[in-house]
Length: 120
Image (cartoon, rainbow, N blue to C red; front, side, top):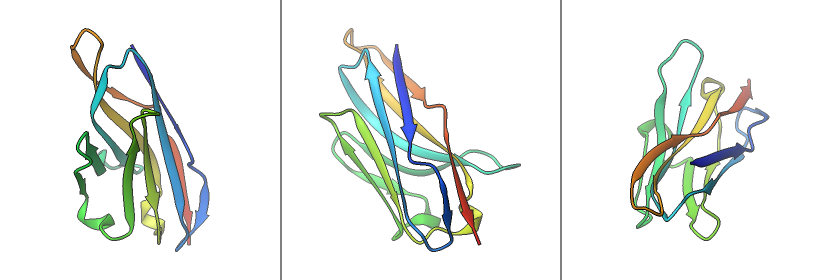
């Protein structure tokens, strides 16, 4: 089993910045993909950004140029630096990781989510 623990979600003013962190622990050989998704009230969960083991990234069009995803494999941690936040980006942000276990099986995990609130 693997646990993903997110942190960094708080209340911030529009135009402000936040950095989210997600640390994975447990039965981990390596992590293929790590990413951030968000779900606003009444909306479907959507991809925000994702990074693979080669540090190739992809972003939702709406966050390009403002958000940066990065990972620290030594810490099994993924970060999301969010700048110029907008009120409509208020959501629960979820961490996702595709983990290769020691026995080489592969499982996708979700964190419990962290609330980001952007005031106007």
